Image (tube, rainbow, N blue to C red; front, side, top):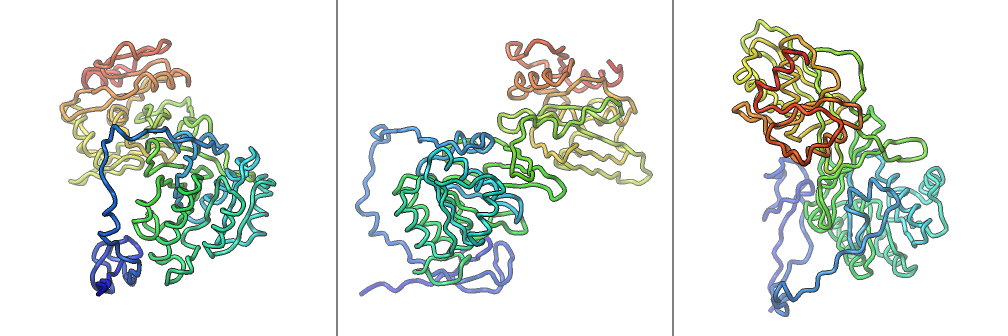
Length: 451
């Protein structure tokens, strides 16, 4: 007698599983998102034929890469698309996901590859109009417009496609799976079909995914575990610049950052990334310091602006944009305790110019220098950058890849750099004057002396 299937319910927002249907998800708190999961349960008998092998007996072959034609995208991916790899690209509506992938599809088709663009949200004429504007129309680029995933996959099989894009995974529907397009069951079924085709054909595939208002990818969280790479495309509404990061990458690093500028002709990679966040102002003002932060392998010149305003309230205000406000609380306490510069009677406002967000601890020394400069009312020396991590004891600690940071600073005209006294000498480039600081007192003395 066959064992009856067990009903379970899943949240379409966060993917949480429960045994009963409830109006509100107990994990993410969303209302009306609990739906029944009708996917077949896995059976233990399906794994009886598998056997373990020695890991040394397995042949390891480096994955083959296919260049996308956009070097910023290739760098974030780790060198290009992987044969048989499936990538999920998410981002806000109108951020440029379809534009980026249509440009990529056109460039790869112009190199002789057979490319298929599957559109489940736009008509064929709309996609073709955008392709002509982006100059991506090519003989080798085919277009399928529809929401039936099986018909779209039949085009992949019949035309020997070497790369294909699905726009989007929430818009497609698997006929054999119940439910509307975009439900967890449908999203999972569509993604599984794409995975099977990509692996069997050994061709790279890209899925475009929607995101929720909280900024996470819509649909079941299982979708992110199924694919090989997850890319997130972000940007501010007031800016023409777009940021591309990898949240997951089975074939490369997740530290790289790709920056694009949205123009009439499409997305253009930004070469001089430091120019986005540093305005090269000649006017010296108290509370402004410069550091070199790393985003993956890319050094970025960051301008840290700090303002100290006297307050009569018992609890001074701390506001930070671009770094964690808790980091500002911590570093202001270190400056007051270890450098003997009073900060408790000031409202402190900190901003990273250009909208850059910094997680790199190498910016600690620059933040402390800006705080000391703002509190003392003395501008920092011109053409000087601060690179170092600051501990609670006030010590200046070394950072990773200081040579790469200093070379970028020297390239942009900086003549002085304050770093940790424990940095190795063999990693220091020529052409820039190095000032070594053991602790915060040594670094703040530059602010006091103005040299």
